Image (cartoon, rainbow, N blue to C red; front, side, top):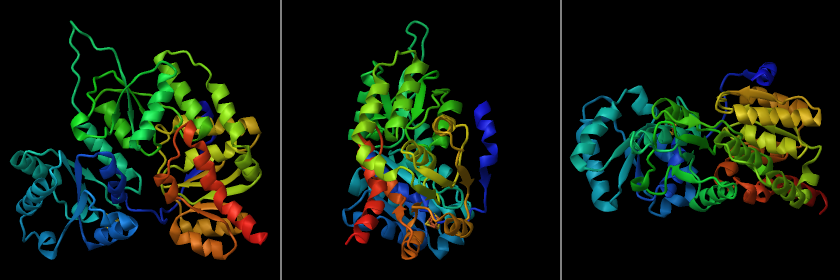
Length: 426
Ligand code: SF4
């Protein structure tokens, strides 16, 4: 912790005037992960337009999400929200047979103070399908934090494994964070090679298979944006949180497994060699990145982890913009970044929480970085000014976790640099 305090001057807050996706976008990956779910976003046309555009072709594949579009009468309380939502949920139950319905609250439900929780309780009893309420509004959260609020609400529905004195349960390990099934299997296998058994994942691929957690169980996150889910597990389910760097890139994956092994008292075998082997295979990419400068404008909370991988590749990070930084939940990640900076004899990069895109553009003009990792609103204008960009939303949807996806990750980052090189030489 002492070392983190030394870095305090390196992180500061701006105005929060930045581009990001609305957190309701999390329905796009969560409905695919939780196969027996249905997501109902309760909002206005604005939310509908956003979902329709941001999720593009997905909307033609009969997805298991829909909008409950609020009208003038809902906002001026002329309609009864209970009967309107009951009608919709009965229709969803009849047509799609979900085992759980998620209600996603938006800015409007927040502003007009719709009491979704108590309405959900009544409707849940009526339709006999569990309803999970999560407020993923754009007033309080950005982009990936949508998954965080959904997970925090889902955890409350996970069954409790009761301890009894005749048959005391030994603490088990649960991992949290939504990943495609094959990726969560890969990470579970990595841990099993060290002798560690993963008792379950939150979310599970089916709501009906939510793992049962007991007080004293160990939990560890796989995404840097799950601080609410982590505090729900600590405070409400009395779990022990393993604070580790996140399994992104060869360095992060090695450190993540190592931290779990140390906490659970397992000996570590062959991890350093494994990491080295992966880096050796990535020389083609790391050679391209070495010495180049990179700037993160910040929108998805993956920024510190990505900056840490790129620092390991000997890139110089000009600035890490990030919507929100929970220094306790990300402590493992920050320590690893600092350790890598110390090994290379460089300063910790500046972390700018709630950045201001206008100020950032001035700084980009000044730094002239080789690569800016940013949203689509700024990407094309920057490209037109001769600055290479990478669209940061891709890191949310691409597979970047674990040793096996390290090449995938570096490929994404080097692609814009290679494209420019190619254009220069043709
Ligand atoms: S920011 Fe608010 S109004 Fe806009 S799409 Fe998101 S929830 Fe809807």
